[in-house]
Image (tube, rainbow, N blue to C red; front, side, top):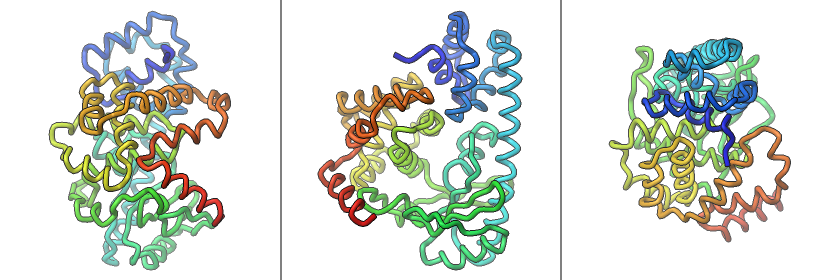
Length: 345
């Protein structure tokens, strides 16, 4: 059972509210909410900018929120905007440098979603990293270019990366694929073939299709498990809310099966439907991905227990690992891969 504070966070963590959502939020404000807890949860889950945006869009809701809480949310909203704009300037410098060197790139996750999916860079929380997909063959030239912009390559180099580079508080991750090889079989070549052109700040960029964003964002949720932040599901929910009528669902079904992430994508969509009370989204998960209610509800129950900071400690690490197997299309193959990985390390 979700607490009223988590319910308030989920109901307000979206780019737009309908009358029913506003009514639901106003009803929750009459139940003696712990506003400090809501503030803490919103910061932890990266949804504070969205919550502030939702509150100030409704006069009755704005009046129902304590002034001190609203002021703190406002400060975080503008702090996130400032940080995002600074990172965007860094990204533009990298983009221009790569373009001069004829290095193709695709910006990933937060650095581009704020401007495209959320239509306002202040609404999508971003840490300090700029994720960029490039061709592996361009790795040396890209690394040199980033270093010339003042970044230093770190010793940490996750699988699927050309490298991780730092400059002050900013970090650039150059990817050539999504996560280490193993059961993460997303076809990177297909992503390059399906990318589309968009204009942001009068700058032409190549970005992932919305279908491929769903694939990669769902995989990120599985990768982060069980320490998943709500903003990850906000990404999923916004894509499904804004673009469900134009998404190529046949491609998603085939690509997720081929990539061995059918259960992962199905659960990400199903959980977004539950969290954001979207019946259409839940039906999509059931009809397209043949959702296994037992499997998904086990994952969802465990996830709900991990939404509150510190509560994760109540769950043994092995329990979380067992739950993670429920994501996997081929549990035997996953187990063999984990054994092989441990032997190598």
